[in-house]
Image (cartoon, rainbow, N blue to C red; front, side, top):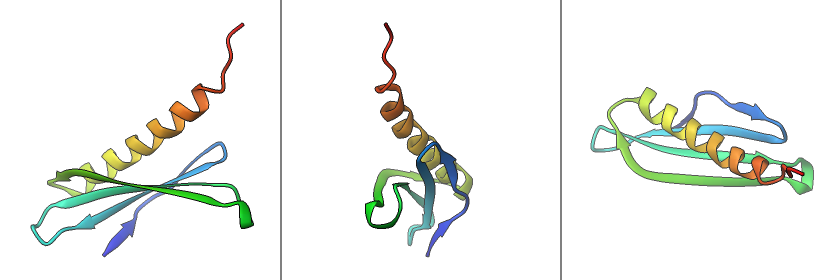
Length: 81
């Protein structure tokens, strides 16, 4: 079962960590990064290979990866003159 625990809004982006309990007993992390609305909605989903001992660790990792992706995109728009 995939669980969306919390979402984080950053500017035009909505970051949603997705954590799954695996058959091996550990936790897998993914993150959804959504932007736009209506017909212009874009949803990027990233799945990560590390496995985690707890739901909290997987959730933290997915959230940080999503925030990092957004930071990279928003910082590239800043022009220093």
